[in-house]
Image: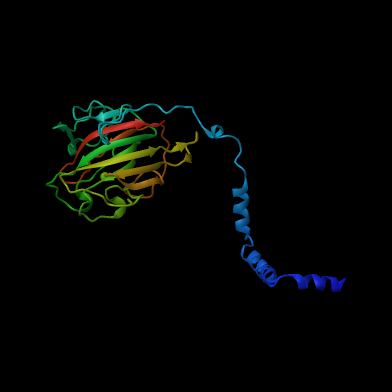
Length: 289
Ligand code: MG
Protein backbone atom coordinates (compact mmCIF):
# COMPACT_ATOMS: atom_id res chain seq x y z
CA UNK A 1 0.00 0.00 0.00
CA UNK A 2 2.69 2.44 1.09
CA UNK A 3 4.90 1.53 -1.82
CA UNK A 4 1.99 2.07 -4.22
CA UNK A 5 1.38 5.58 -2.88
CA UNK A 6 5.09 6.32 -3.05
CA UNK A 7 5.13 5.17 -6.62
CA UNK A 8 2.19 7.44 -7.46
CA UNK A 9 3.76 10.45 -5.78
CA UNK A 10 6.90 9.94 -7.70
CA UNK A 11 4.90 10.39 -10.87
CA UNK A 12 3.62 13.85 -9.82
CA UNK A 13 5.39 16.49 -11.89
CA UNK A 14 7.47 18.95 -9.80
CA UNK A 15 5.38 21.88 -10.97
CA UNK A 16 2.18 20.38 -9.56
CA UNK A 17 3.96 19.47 -6.36
CA UNK A 18 4.98 23.12 -5.90
CA UNK A 19 1.41 24.23 -6.39
CA UNK A 20 0.17 21.67 -3.90
CA UNK A 21 2.67 22.92 -1.29
CA UNK A 22 1.53 26.49 -1.89
CA UNK A 23 -2.08 25.53 -1.33
CA UNK A 24 -1.23 23.58 1.81
CA UNK A 25 0.80 26.48 3.29
CA UNK A 26 -1.13 29.50 2.05
CA UNK A 27 -4.62 28.03 2.36
CA UNK A 28 -4.93 28.22 6.15
CA UNK A 29 -3.21 31.64 6.15
CA UNK A 30 -5.75 33.10 3.71
CA UNK A 31 -8.57 31.52 5.63
CA UNK A 32 -7.24 33.14 8.79
CA UNK A 33 -7.07 36.57 7.15
CA UNK A 34 -10.62 36.34 5.88
CA UNK A 35 -11.99 34.85 9.05
CA UNK A 36 -15.15 36.82 9.69
CA UNK A 37 -15.21 38.98 12.78
CA UNK A 38 -18.55 39.00 14.60
CA UNK A 39 -19.30 42.37 12.98
CA UNK A 40 -18.50 41.09 9.51
CA UNK A 41 -20.74 38.08 10.05
CA UNK A 42 -23.57 40.42 11.00
CA UNK A 43 -23.08 42.61 7.92
CA UNK A 44 -22.80 39.73 5.54
CA UNK A 45 -25.92 38.16 7.02
CA UNK A 46 -27.82 41.39 6.33
CA UNK A 47 -26.35 41.82 2.89
CA UNK A 48 -27.08 38.23 2.06
CA UNK A 49 -30.78 38.67 2.86
CA UNK A 50 -32.58 38.45 -0.47
CA UNK A 51 -34.71 41.38 -1.59
CA UNK A 52 -38.28 40.36 -1.03
CA UNK A 53 -41.08 41.08 -3.45
CA UNK A 54 -41.23 43.54 -6.32
CA UNK A 55 -40.22 47.23 -6.64
CA UNK A 56 -43.90 48.17 -6.63
CA UNK A 57 -44.29 46.74 -3.13
CA UNK A 58 -42.47 49.73 -1.61
CA UNK A 59 -44.09 52.48 -3.71
CA UNK A 60 -46.54 54.76 -1.89
CA UNK A 61 -49.14 56.62 -3.98
CA UNK A 62 -51.38 58.28 -1.39
CA UNK A 63 -51.93 60.78 0.10
CA UNK A 64 -50.82 62.95 -2.82
CA UNK A 65 -48.99 66.10 -1.57
CA UNK A 66 -51.04 69.19 -2.34
CA UNK A 67 -49.94 71.40 -5.19
CA UNK A 68 -48.46 74.70 -3.94
CA UNK A 69 -47.36 77.41 -6.31
CA UNK A 70 -44.13 78.91 -5.02
CA UNK A 71 -43.66 82.66 -4.81
CA UNK A 72 -41.79 84.45 -7.59
CA UNK A 73 -38.71 84.15 -5.41
CA UNK A 74 -37.93 82.28 -2.21
CA UNK A 75 -39.17 85.11 0.00
CA UNK A 76 -42.53 85.78 -1.69
CA UNK A 77 -45.49 83.97 -0.13
CA UNK A 78 -46.43 80.68 -1.79
CA UNK A 79 -50.04 80.08 -2.80
CA UNK A 80 -51.15 78.49 0.49
CA UNK A 81 -49.59 81.05 2.83
CA UNK A 82 -51.57 83.33 5.14
CA UNK A 83 -50.14 86.78 4.50
CA UNK A 84 -49.78 88.60 7.82
CA UNK A 85 -48.23 91.79 6.42
CA UNK A 86 -47.81 92.73 2.78
CA UNK A 87 -46.91 96.39 3.24
CA UNK A 88 -50.47 97.73 3.14
CA UNK A 89 -52.14 97.54 6.54
CA UNK A 90 -52.28 95.98 10.01
CA UNK A 91 -55.59 94.18 9.54
CA UNK A 92 -54.11 90.90 10.80
CA UNK A 93 -52.70 92.45 14.00
CA UNK A 94 -53.82 93.79 17.34
CA UNK A 95 -52.22 95.23 20.45
CA UNK A 96 -50.41 92.86 22.80
CA UNK A 97 -49.51 95.43 25.43
CA UNK A 98 -50.16 94.76 29.10
CA UNK A 99 -53.14 97.13 29.18
CA UNK A 100 -54.58 96.89 25.70
CA UNK A 101 -54.17 93.24 24.75
CA UNK A 102 -57.20 92.07 22.80
CA UNK A 103 -58.91 95.45 23.08
CA UNK A 104 -57.35 97.73 20.51
CA UNK A 105 -55.99 97.47 16.98
CA UNK A 106 -52.27 97.44 16.43
CA UNK A 107 -50.89 100.96 16.26
CA UNK A 108 -47.48 100.55 14.74
CA UNK A 109 -46.47 102.65 11.75
CA UNK A 110 -47.12 101.47 8.19
CA UNK A 111 -45.21 103.48 5.62
CA UNK A 112 -43.34 102.76 2.38
CA UNK A 113 -44.55 99.13 2.50
CA UNK A 114 -42.78 98.73 5.84
CA UNK A 115 -44.04 98.22 9.37
CA UNK A 116 -42.10 100.15 11.99
CA UNK A 117 -42.24 99.50 15.73
CA UNK A 118 -44.06 102.10 17.78
CA UNK A 119 -42.39 101.67 21.14
CA UNK A 120 -44.86 103.92 22.93
CA UNK A 121 -47.79 101.51 22.40
CA UNK A 122 -46.10 98.19 23.14
CA UNK A 123 -45.95 94.87 21.30
CA UNK A 124 -48.42 93.66 18.68
CA UNK A 125 -49.68 90.16 17.88
CA UNK A 126 -51.70 88.37 15.23
CA UNK A 127 -55.46 88.13 15.53
CA UNK A 128 -55.21 84.56 14.30
CA UNK A 129 -53.80 81.85 16.49
CA UNK A 130 -51.56 79.01 15.38
CA UNK A 131 -50.08 75.74 16.49
CA UNK A 132 -47.42 74.33 14.17
CA UNK A 133 -46.33 76.51 11.28
CA UNK A 134 -43.70 77.74 8.86
CA UNK A 135 -43.06 81.48 9.15
CA UNK A 136 -41.24 83.95 6.93
CA UNK A 137 -40.47 87.43 8.26
CA UNK A 138 -38.06 90.17 7.23
CA UNK A 139 -36.66 92.83 9.54
CA UNK A 140 -34.30 95.77 9.31
CA UNK A 141 -32.32 97.64 11.89
CA UNK A 142 -32.14 101.31 10.83
CA UNK A 143 -28.86 102.50 9.41
CA UNK A 144 -28.59 105.22 12.06
CA UNK A 145 -28.94 102.77 14.96
CA UNK A 146 -27.36 103.76 18.28
CA UNK A 147 -26.86 102.00 21.59
CA UNK A 148 -24.95 98.90 22.64
CA UNK A 149 -25.63 95.33 23.70
CA UNK A 150 -29.30 94.55 24.26
CA UNK A 151 -30.14 98.23 23.81
CA UNK A 152 -29.36 98.29 20.08
CA UNK A 153 -32.12 97.27 17.66
CA UNK A 154 -33.78 94.94 20.15
CA UNK A 155 -37.08 93.38 19.13
CA UNK A 156 -38.23 89.80 18.77
CA UNK A 157 -40.65 87.36 17.25
CA UNK A 158 -42.65 85.51 19.89
CA UNK A 159 -43.37 82.23 18.16
CA UNK A 160 -46.26 81.65 20.53
CA UNK A 161 -47.63 84.56 22.54
CA UNK A 162 -49.04 83.17 25.77
CA UNK A 163 -49.93 86.46 27.40
CA UNK A 164 -49.39 90.22 27.22
CA UNK A 165 -45.98 91.86 27.11
CA UNK A 166 -43.09 89.41 26.81
CA UNK A 167 -45.01 86.22 27.69
CA UNK A 168 -44.22 83.37 25.30
CA UNK A 169 -41.35 81.97 23.28
CA UNK A 170 -39.03 84.60 21.82
CA UNK A 171 -36.80 84.31 18.79
CA UNK A 172 -34.53 87.28 19.43
CA UNK A 173 -34.06 90.20 17.06
CA UNK A 174 -31.09 92.47 17.71
CA UNK A 175 -28.42 94.33 15.79
CA UNK A 176 -25.74 91.64 16.02
CA UNK A 177 -23.64 92.90 13.13
CA UNK A 178 -20.92 94.30 15.37
CA UNK A 179 -22.42 94.41 18.80
CA UNK A 180 -21.27 92.27 21.68
CA UNK A 181 -23.79 90.82 24.08
CA UNK A 182 -24.48 87.51 25.80
CA UNK A 183 -24.58 84.91 23.02
CA UNK A 184 -27.89 83.40 24.08
CA UNK A 185 -29.36 86.85 23.56
CA UNK A 186 -27.96 87.80 20.16
CA UNK A 187 -29.92 87.78 16.91
CA UNK A 188 -31.06 84.28 16.00
CA UNK A 189 -31.05 83.05 19.59
CA UNK A 190 -33.99 81.53 21.38
CA UNK A 191 -33.77 84.10 24.10
CA UNK A 192 -31.62 82.83 27.00
CA UNK A 193 -32.02 79.22 25.83
CA UNK A 194 -30.58 78.58 22.39
CA UNK A 195 -27.31 80.08 21.15
CA UNK A 196 -27.44 80.49 17.35
CA UNK A 197 -25.19 78.12 15.37
CA UNK A 198 -23.77 81.08 13.41
CA UNK A 199 -24.02 84.86 13.12
CA UNK A 200 -25.04 85.76 9.55
CA UNK A 201 -26.28 89.26 10.47
CA UNK A 202 -26.18 91.89 7.72
CA UNK A 203 -25.28 95.53 8.32
CA UNK A 204 -27.82 97.95 9.81
CA UNK A 205 -29.92 99.37 6.98
CA UNK A 206 -30.06 96.02 5.15
CA UNK A 207 -33.00 93.59 5.26
CA UNK A 208 -32.62 90.36 7.20
CA UNK A 209 -34.79 87.25 6.87
CA UNK A 210 -35.97 84.65 9.33
CA UNK A 211 -37.51 81.43 8.07
CA UNK A 212 -38.87 79.44 10.98
CA UNK A 213 -40.45 76.05 11.56
CA UNK A 214 -42.27 76.05 14.88
CA UNK A 215 -43.52 72.81 16.41
CA UNK A 216 -45.73 73.74 19.32
CA UNK A 217 -45.48 71.95 22.67
CA UNK A 218 -48.21 69.47 23.52
CA UNK A 219 -49.71 69.37 26.99
CA UNK A 220 -51.62 66.76 28.93
CA UNK A 221 -55.10 67.54 30.23
CA UNK A 222 -53.68 68.27 33.69
CA UNK A 223 -51.35 70.92 32.24
CA UNK A 224 -48.18 68.85 32.42
CA UNK A 225 -45.92 68.73 29.37
CA UNK A 226 -46.41 65.85 26.94
CA UNK A 227 -43.90 66.87 24.24
CA UNK A 228 -41.70 70.01 24.19
CA UNK A 229 -41.59 72.74 21.56
CA UNK A 230 -39.06 72.48 18.76
CA UNK A 231 -37.82 75.23 16.48
CA UNK A 232 -35.73 75.39 13.34
CA UNK A 233 -34.55 78.80 12.13
CA UNK A 234 -32.80 79.93 8.97
CA UNK A 235 -31.35 83.45 9.40
CA UNK A 236 -30.53 85.05 6.05
CA UNK A 237 -30.61 81.51 4.65
CA UNK A 238 -28.15 80.18 7.25
CA UNK A 239 -29.24 77.50 9.73
CA UNK A 240 -29.00 78.97 13.22
CA UNK A 241 -31.42 76.74 15.17
CA UNK A 242 -31.65 73.09 14.17
CA UNK A 243 -34.75 71.41 15.59
CA UNK A 244 -33.87 73.02 18.92
CA UNK A 245 -35.80 71.67 21.90
CA UNK A 246 -37.08 74.45 24.13
CA UNK A 247 -37.06 74.20 27.91
CA UNK A 248 -40.18 76.31 28.19
CA UNK A 249 -41.18 79.92 27.71
CA UNK A 250 -38.29 82.36 27.31
CA UNK A 251 -37.70 84.49 30.38
CA UNK A 252 -35.67 87.62 31.09
CA UNK A 253 -35.14 86.55 34.70
CA UNK A 254 -35.17 82.99 35.99
CA UNK A 255 -35.37 79.56 34.44
CA UNK A 256 -37.76 78.70 31.61
CA UNK A 257 -40.83 76.58 32.28
CA UNK A 258 -43.82 75.39 30.29
CA UNK A 259 -47.31 76.75 30.73
CA UNK A 260 -50.22 75.03 29.01
CA UNK A 261 -51.63 76.66 25.89
CA UNK A 262 -53.47 75.37 22.87
CA UNK A 263 -53.10 77.78 19.96
CA UNK A 264 -51.36 81.15 20.18
CA UNK A 265 -50.76 84.39 18.32
CA UNK A 266 -47.42 85.34 16.82
CA UNK A 267 -46.14 88.47 18.54
CA UNK A 268 -43.66 91.19 17.57
CA UNK A 269 -41.82 92.88 20.39
CA UNK A 270 -41.68 96.56 21.19
CA UNK A 271 -38.57 96.60 23.36
CA UNK A 272 -38.20 99.29 25.94
CA UNK A 273 -34.69 100.42 25.09
CA UNK A 274 -34.00 103.87 23.68
CA UNK A 275 -32.48 102.84 20.35
CA UNK A 276 -34.16 103.70 17.05
CA UNK A 277 -37.10 101.37 16.20
CA UNK A 278 -36.65 98.56 13.70
CA UNK A 279 -38.94 97.74 10.76
CA UNK A 280 -40.58 94.62 9.32
CA UNK A 281 -41.90 93.58 5.93
CA UNK A 282 -43.16 90.54 4.01
CA UNK A 283 -44.58 88.43 6.84
CA UNK A 284 -46.38 85.21 5.98
CA UNK A 285 -47.14 81.90 7.59
CA UNK A 286 -48.08 78.39 6.46
CA UNK A 287 -49.96 76.25 8.94
CA UNK A 288 -48.55 72.75 9.42
CA UNK A 289 -51.31 71.21 11.45
MG1 MG B 1 -36.04 90.98 22.20
